Amino acid sequence: MIDKYPAVYILTNQYKTVFYTGVTTNLLQRIYQHKMQMADGFSKKYGLKVLVYFEMHEEIEAAIQREKRLKRWRRSWKIKLIEQQNPNWRDLYPLILG
Image 1 (tube, rainbow, N blue to C red):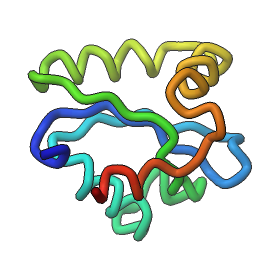
Image 2 (image 1 turned 120 degrees about the vertical axis):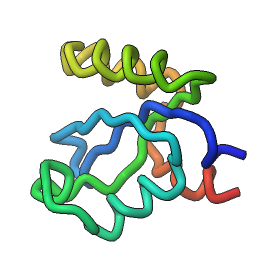
Image 3 (image 1 turned 90 degrees about the vertical axis):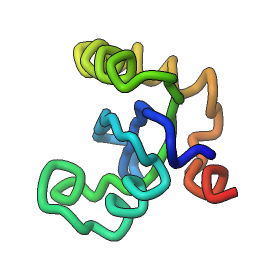
Image 4 (image 1 turned 180 degrees about the vertical axis):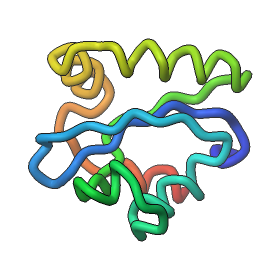
């Protein structure tokens, strides 16, 4: 089940101008929270609701380390990473809904 494993994810807005990189142990729930703007913060402020990238991990520690690395990446590197998995930049949320 995708919602029970640690995951790193990247959200963007409809214009692909801002990225948010996050980590969670329940991807389905967390992306729903972003989409419904249930928490104040960066993603709500910039309207980041489009899940364009995610990767699952076995251990939360590995996911946290990966998130920290991705947050330091240049924008161009993140775009390349996203486009390797999701070349059309479609919202992957329906995919994780099953």
